[in-house]
Length: 394
Ligand SMILES: Cc1ncc(C[n+]2csc(CCOP(=O)(O)OP(=O)(O)O)c2C)c(N)n1
Ligand SMILES: [Mg+2]
Image (cartoon, rainbow, N blue to C red; front, side):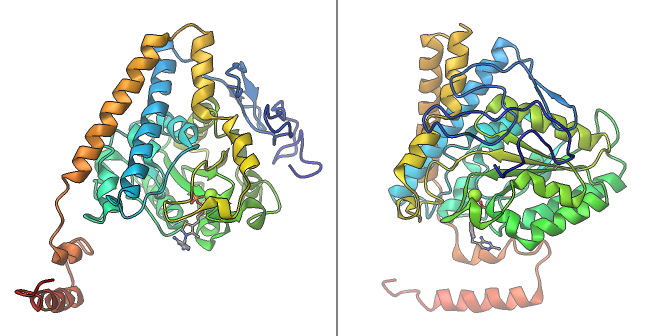
């Protein structure tokens, strides 16, 4: 963390959030909100920069549920990576290492809240109750990633870096105009993006609009330390959460490998937004344990010791250590979850393999709701082209 940064906040007040030390690397970690240490010790509560007290009060069942979510999303993700390696998907963007950031924030959403994802939010998608098979058609190249964003309150995957932050801000301004904010049952919007995306004009424009119009927004940045091969220091000279200061709304950094802290911080920010208190930038400090996508080889640009240091902060191991210490889960429970995850992964695989290839001409079907003359002529042209192969070996 930058010199002079420790102990102060975006608003210049004192915070009780303490820098923590990494077990494996021994290096000081940046100041962040943490409620569960990598060893599985609970931190009772943390006071944020503006005096907000972050804590969670889950039942035993809910703690077990979070553990289950984390294991499920990791297993399904691993299966998708394997499917790509076997040629069944064109590409896959793994969430490995980011499970807590996604499950913590995903479970913090209330039913009425709207989420705008990137291409990596499979864990949030899972929490929104969307069948995990849904994005796989997109990555297999057999459909355009179609689920109904309104039905699930979860936008379509967005590959154009940062674009969804503008869509989200416009949506958030819209629900304010519709009078849908302002109470406990008010709506809030969350936009996901990465550390690299913070360098995009779109994201900075979204910050301006959301700030100026006090939009009911949470900007949720998963700082996984890399934008493909570009490390964080190529994006910023200050901690990302402090960017919010320049746009006039609060920013906070949370341990993105801590599902409890991520939940607490996201829930509080969403509740502020729904009550008309405007946007918050959350920087979930985490690490991309795998490759950027299956087309990438991270050994070309990062060293093994860095990956090992983050391995010691694994988001699932700490929840497991915690529930074991609390004696709220036994060996049978862990075995059952593993077995359930294995079954779901097998089912996912079977359904991917059974996906029919689409008629190539259907490519044009979902570009515009009501079509367009230009598209119609392109479809015509493409159909004639495809017909020219009829009867040939290809
Ligand atoms: C506008 C735009 N520019 C470039 C790309 C190519 N691209 C794909 S992913 C990526 C890096 C994104 O990094 P980050 O925002 O940190 O997200 P992460 O992939 O680490 O989750 C880039 C540059 C793109 N998809 N869109
Ligand atoms: Mg990144």
